[in-house]
Length: 107
Image (cartoon, rainbow, N blue to C red):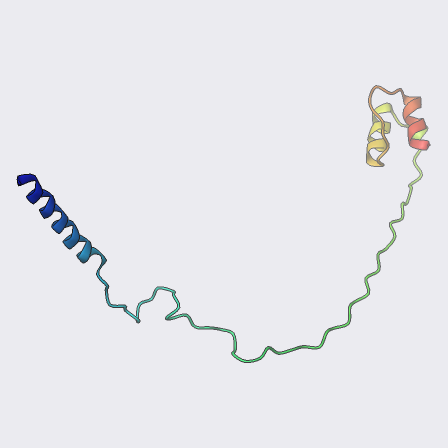
């Protein structure tokens, strides 16, 4: 009978603690936390305003023109030719000889 009294007392203590923990608290409507009670809408109420559609602007793209400067390729060194090929998007590498690089650039 001793154990039944201990278990019963524990259940009563548990129920009382749960009551005080979960009892309803009054709601403070003047608090500063953002919730549905104190949110102020910045949009006007009523029907939406409809604006007339603006005509689309015509966009014209300018064609890219390559202005090839006259460069004396024959007088350039191999390193200069490699740099020129790289700048103009021509596939050339250091394992190629000067004549091959010139042919790649010209043709």
